[in-house]
Amino acid sequence: MHEFSIALNILEIAESTALQHEAPGISEVEVEVGDAAGVNIEALEFAWESAAGASPLLKQSKLAIHRVPLLFECPRCRHQYSPAELDVICPACGEKDSLLVQGRELKVKSVTLMDP
Image (cartoon, rainbow, N blue to C red; front, side, top):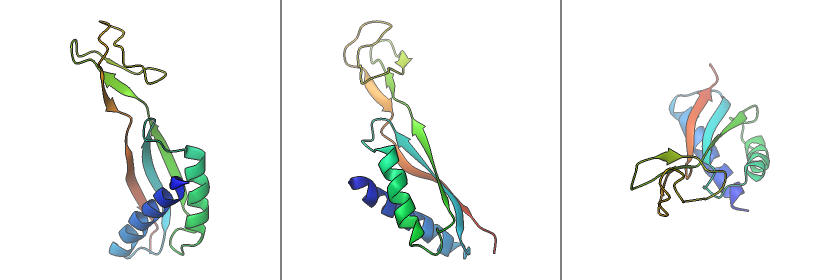
């Protein structure tokens, strides 16, 4: 379950941010997870609860996960589209080699610190 290692990495980023700003704790961590990132959201939430519960800075924190939908762009006609599945055929011109331009993200968007 690689979601636990992802949760630990998010936790490290959040704790580092809190320590840099001398905050007593963290109330929320926002992350963006693309639909093509290969992350199971439910497993990540479970791993976060386990990892954050062991951290004095994150015990009361909330993990806000924002899904980033797939977005393809056709190299021929530049049409952008969001398919329900990994369908790389452009619905506008039929080109078969559309490029994934959004949906692989896995990043910490923000860390909300508690006031001292």
